[in-house]
Image 1 (cartoon, rainbow, N blue to C red):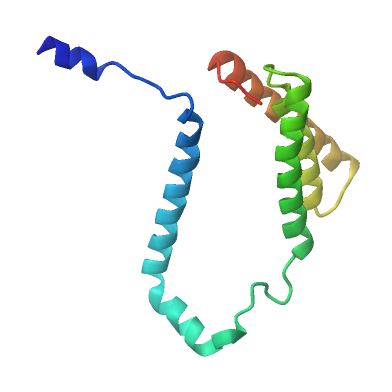
Image 2: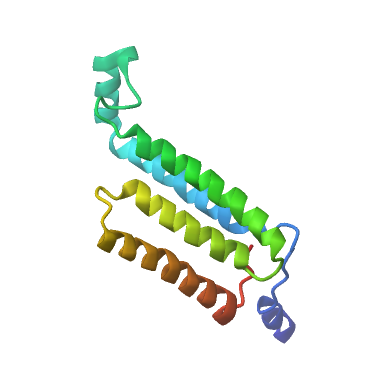
Length: 147
């Protein structure tokens, strides 16, 4: 009996597959939410498809395509840069830190409506402080390795 109870407290980790746990979890949750959204709005979605037919457009007439495509490009550049900078400073988390700072600064500039000196100061402060705090908390307090 005690052998069974102690085996419940043992954890074995397959390090070859452990990095896939959270992406699979997030993809499962996103797929579940998609099914839930379609199920809850099926009538409205069916009516839109019935009335518009093949005339469904991905973008509305006044969609902000610049911000959409800039965001997609910055996200791709962020992950590529994180890997590249992480290889320059291996096992330090500096790839995450420096890439996150540049990413947050650039993304904030894409979404700000009017660039003033004060706004630029706030964006710069946020781009420096937020990744530094996340880097410290994850890397030092929780001992999570960062790229």
